[in-house]
Length: 463
Image (cartoon, rainbow, N blue to C red; front, top):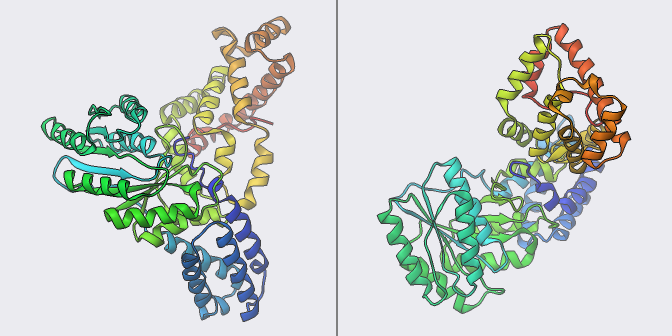
């Protein structure tokens, strides 16, 4: 879903457990050793339940308690809120600094090596990383796979390279991994590539043979970045694998995958602390654009139910067509009607941002219920149906909805594969929106409002 950062899914159990533990303190007039101790104990249990490593839990809760019984919390005017602030700050500190991406300050081609267990998502992450380097860093990227044990992995990487616009160095199952890597490095040098992305083979379990192979590859191509790719759903196994790979390779960073899955979040909190290496990226879906820089402060906010409004703003700015928004504002300000073609554009942009649920997920917990009620049941299916209804209309009907009589409605419903009441409901919503926008245009408020909203959905949709 691109910037539709679905990190809360990964931390669902931790979020609910911590929220329950901290809620009891939020309204306290004063804090005592007893109620701080009780809450810290609940926090400890919540972290352990989320598969956070025991050593990490102890470090974290000791730091929280030391600060909580100090002056900054006990003497605060709102000690409950001050305690939550301490938990947020320590959670952020635990996960490390915000990621700025890869360190590419080296002689070209910069070699980036991906390692990890089989099934962690290395090959998919390589494709995502290539796209990030090409689109965000404007780099020329060559990709190569040394996974001679799974020819399908080589073919998968070749397909991904074509999709994201990267070069691909061929490899064959009959070759030695080191020979493949050396040939790819030579090609990257001769063809003036900026980055060589090396996708290594994985195993279902850590073994001496795999570790020996990654060490050989490291010696052969001297990678500038050595990234450990870890499945966020692997729990304690992820931490053990991280230790083993760090001992073998001296890692420079971590990519956390499958953050949109049903994980408990322990890996994200543990891997950074156990390896001492930063989490650089988080994979949040299957698509090649679903890779994001790791932002610990935002993730800490989301774990504690505080939302992630900054990510929401960035998502809207990055995925809304600003030019279309400006044109729409000017059009209506000049007295021209908002038509069904305009509504189709708005629905499409909302769908591109992952639908209403993806936007609501970034709001603070206390705002979500009200926002969800206001937004109505605007889910992906309803968005597709509404766009299908508009697509079944003629261009003239989209420009002049007043022409749509009973027989036209029946034709539109049949073309869209929906029932007649759905067409009526959409037209009623549209009529409400059109009247609202006309009122705003008369007062001269619309242009400023549309700029402020960056083209987001006009009021009234989905009721």
